[in-house]
Length: 324
Image (cartoon, rainbow, N blue to C red; front, side):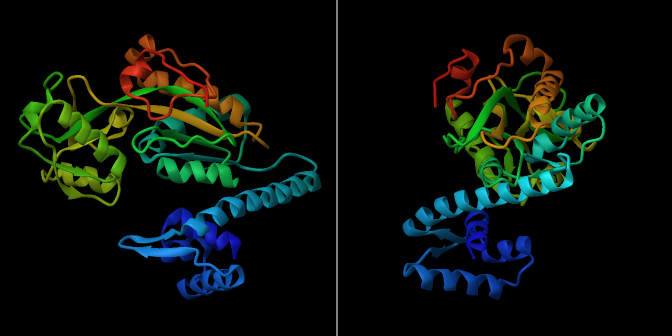
């Protein structure tokens, strides 16, 4: 029941939790109801998009997550000893844009150097991946500090990989295609599409600084859907610069004047780290530098377990840091 409750909180949906756990939705509902009867409090409340933890539920979620994490570590430790060798696959998480190119490239470099390593890749949003690292589901995750930013948590290590400038993706043949850096004012009459709140927040902030409004009239379920709407001429979109080399052929990109940027981080658990997570960190830094050569020349990649998460691009460019 505890794992079911933690999964529901992470996904914000009974049906999504049921699908991930391979249960029926009614079975998940019964487990949650049984847990609430056992504790004598309501743990979940419904809202327009699903469910969320009540204040009591959030307190229980934190303790349950810590307990489940330790239990999973105990199981893995016993299996490792029983097998006579460390055989746990390397579980890697990444945001969709980073999973599209940079992270697989870094893993390929790791395999070339280290030989055969079993591994898996789980795409997801930064907050979801952060929780899965804490839960022990992931050994390493590559995330961003796009709004609402990364949480402060002493259970994970953070390595700052660099800043990624956002770019505008357009359909081939768009009047702005092929031009140099475009001011936001030149796109004020365009319809935009977004697929997540973080990217939408960056777009609105950049537009506000330019003194215009961004008409986000369309919403996509995911990144491929977002690009499909751009390719068919329904809208334009803001996307991460690291995604440029992995785009479909019927769209193109243009840089923005003074573009919004997001920090890229690799996070790993402080306890029970996977032995291949540390070498993968160096390959991730190299892969990011290869994607952003001009950026890497001015913003050296450095290891820092404590960074001002969600800091503005200007502060990050100046190398501003503070301890968590």
